[in-house]
View 1 (tube, rainbow over the protein chains, first blue to last red):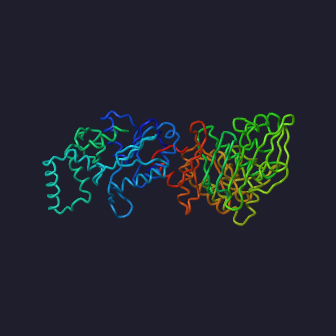
View 2: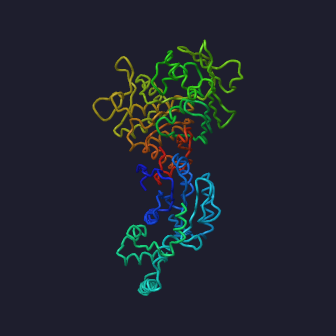
View 3: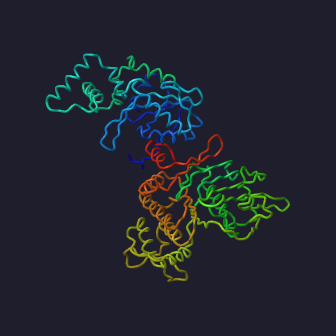
Length: 218
Length: 328
């Protein structure tokens, strides 16, 4: 990341949504548009940077003077790029507790449960993807919305076939399945965020319902 | 070294707390949030003789020194909202010893003047210093020695004498050359010389003749003064207004490294202001390359009418820069 780039992310709206990474930012921009919610989205970069990001974000004068509600959305597992470990799994409860600790460090109240907003101003809510209950990530949610049993079987056959040809199973099967699905939709850049912009995900599918209900509370 | 600073009822600060202070402190904020006022508070806190009072009003701002206008147009405005019933207080905690304080008290009329009390505040029978329209006075006190670098260029003669002193210290010349080559890579040698009536510093850039430093860019002159002063002045606190003035952003990281090294070796605590994004990034990069990251950014910001200070540590600043959150 080029730190010399001049910042261009002011806080200008009363509703704020903090998400992890550019992919999530694109995904939520499309979903909020579909839901008709006028909120500003900020990328907090990575789970390990959420704590200092919240401290900086909540210290902004615009935040103190303008923001009426904000939500943090993160995966129940996160990637660790440094070192050899690709992903670190957390239960949704652990992920929730971790975000609460970061909120407290930023001098903010913490919600009692995932997907439940605090009542005092600013209202604060946390959502742990895919549904605050199961382990997973944004891809888990997106895949669930399109995975009929037939599609699932096709993709499984593809990976089994590749394995027979000497290709190891992908380490992150959820992401690999999502990319395989998107490749069949003429989206060769395997970003679910970009797929969201192109209207690939069926927003009315029940898989999105918990997230939709949460965002409507923002 | 100062660990924390509290400013009450001074200039635009109703109540300001800054903590923790580091070896190098960069102060940012929008216009009129009090960056220069913060430097002035430190200046007052560290007053050690009456001459410094005389120079105070013009240390960072344009003024008519020691005039009636100066009293009305400068000293009275040191009181929050020009309310002279208030008693502005500046308090700092040093790493060792008791708190240092400075308190202003407005007296009069008919003989209007501002009394400056140090450390014992107003229960002392006599203030340390007095400022009246057109005059000032007071004795000497023992304080951390301060060094000021405003946006004005220094006097070339003074700069020459400074450089002369540097050149008489062990490896002083080599050190300054190394620091100054960051802004002028062609620099081969610096020399103190008195060719005309007054001595000047001359720079050898590989041409047939040495060039007077006064004929080089503003950034070069400003940095030469800064580095020389840091090396020989024995100051313990350095106040720099708009540090990036006259300096190209591409060399700022190396300049911060130079300031960091000198601040450490000469035991100087630095307070600098800036409006520049490039300057902030450069400082962060320079200190991230050091062992201790003895650096903090303090952003002054107005919230619901009052100015507050937000102190950014390493990870908060790094994340703000990456997350494109404003820190200027």
